[in-house]
Image (cartoon, rainbow, N blue to C red; front, side):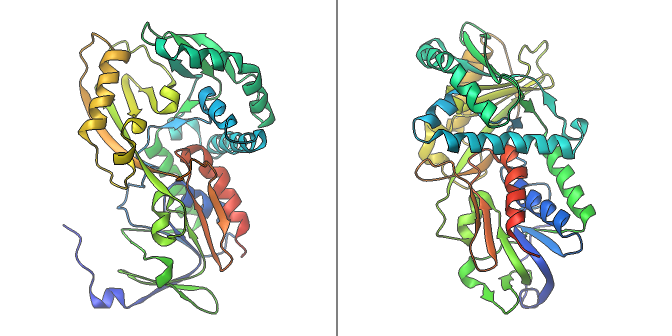
Length: 380
């Protein structure tokens, strides 16, 4: 049945009052609510999201990488940021990945830990050698961030088209759908209420009351003591002053390939391309840098331009001479800044509202740690 337009009675009704209302039920919103309920187990918490059940922006529509930073990404960061900033971000990403593993079983997440790799074409030999020459510095940054062992190593290339490689310890692949199901189950068991298909208006339409906020919606009026905007790429719709630029990430997945040689997670083209095995299938995503203007969108639709680009890379670089069929295609929307800053928003806005957003394409890794930080800012 298609969605019906709301009636006057639906719009003009009071809904339950909550101690905490989280706008956005993706990974960041879920982890924020879960951490806050651990601190305040008897309080009333609700999450609302405009998407239907089973979907959550980029959280359930990504490539399933549990990663924290490839060598060329860190080298590029070092050109623009102080080391302390990079170390702190690495710490948050790695700590977030460990929280997934400490909270849920590997089989629940379909978590497969193996060394990741960054791979280079012959034309990228200069970038490869720059990274090799910087390995001691990069490993020192990782050590300062609390990542154990030696993180980055020289590795063997995977083909004549990708003859150079560096390995990345502690990376993994996971099933984002299963991870999302684990989180939502943990939250509902903790007593949280999840409401789907609810679009909430900008903050300018909210009404401040003595105890908290009244927020109108097509479902009725929500009231809450504290409100967290955690809708990532859509957070700007509630808080227009935020510097958030959407970035669509497109993905394709092949049909089963006998004797698939790729095992693990792989980064290419300075992180703008990424591929991994999903059982005996190959997943490939990215290409946003080649079509930047058209990919700065909230649309979850795939496009022929990006999908053709990915297929060319698949057939010419990854699996030349092999007949491969594509089984699935999809896209998810990430959140970035307009000036290239990778600093996420985790802020108390000072009026019983908060924002946790702009994960920069690293929501899987960052959401547990930044959700905990957000929860610590919200009083009971």
